[in-house]
Image (cartoon, rainbow, N blue to C red; front, side, top):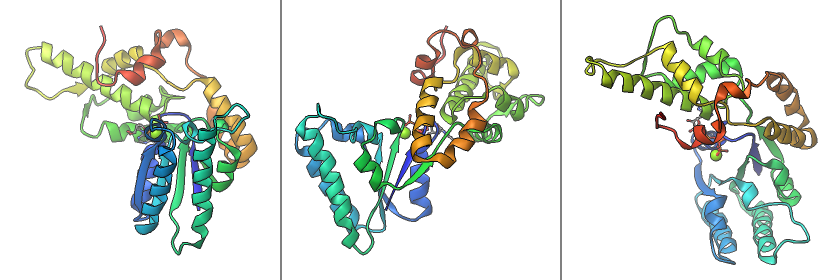
Length: 269
Ligand SMILES: Nc1ncnc2c1ncn2[C@@H]1O[C@H](COP(=O)(O)OP(=O)(O)OP(=O)(O)O)[C@@H](O)[C@H]1O
Ligand SMILES: [Mg+2]
C-alpha cells in the first residue's frame, strides 16, 4: 500500500521513484510537497483528494510525494488547524482506498524522516533506506557520468571511487561536470580547440579542489537515529558505510556544501 524512501539528499531517491514506476509499468503521479505547500489554505486538501481520484482511475498507479516531510510534519500543539486538515485528508484518502480493486501505491520520499508524522508513517509500512553509495557503486556511477567522455588511459575509475568516500551520486555528477568543463575550458584556450577533450587526473584534481561531499555527518546521524527506531535492519549497512572517515575540511575549500550543489555547470575563478 505504501513505502517510504529515506536518506540524505542527492542519493537518487527521486530517480529511483521514476525507475520503480517504469519497472512496474505503473503510471506515476509525481508531486513535490513544495508545489502543494504553496497553495492557498484549503487548496492542498482538494489537490490531495483529486490526486487520489485520478490515481484510482488510471490504475495501476503510484502517487509519489517527494520531500514529503514538508507537507506531513509531526503534529504538535502549536500546529495550525489547516496544517492538520491536509494531513487528515491524506489519511482519509489512504484509508478509503482499501475498497478499491487496484488501489494506488503511495510512495513518499524524504531527507528528514524524523520530522514525519507518526500517523503518516503508519500508512507507509515499507521503508527503504537510500544511503551513500559504496565504493563499487561509486565506480559504477562514475562510469555512467563519464560514458561519453575520453579519459586519460592511466586514470582508473577505481581511483576516482576511492577518492569519493562519503560523496553522494549527485556529488559525483558535480565532480564529473566540473572536470569536463575544466578540460573543455583548457582546450578552448589552446590551439587545438577542434580536437575532442580528454579528461586527465589534473582536471579531476582541480574539480576536487572546488567541490566536495555535501552531506554533513549530523545529517547522517539523524537518519541513523530514525533507522534505529523504524528500520533497524538498515542500520547494519549504515555502520559499514558511515565508518569511512570524512576528508578534512580544509581540503574541500570554504562553503563547499553550498557551492557544489548550487553551481553545477559553472567554473569558478
Ligand atoms: N545512485 C545513483 N546513481 C546514479 N546517479 C545518481 C545516483 N544518486 C544520485 N544520482 C544523480 O544525482 C541526481 C540527483 O539525485 P536525486 O535528485 O534523485 O536525489 P534525491 O535523493 O532525490 O535528492 P534530494 O533529496 O536532494 O531530492 C540524479 O538525477 C542522478 O543524476
Ligand atoms: Mg529528490
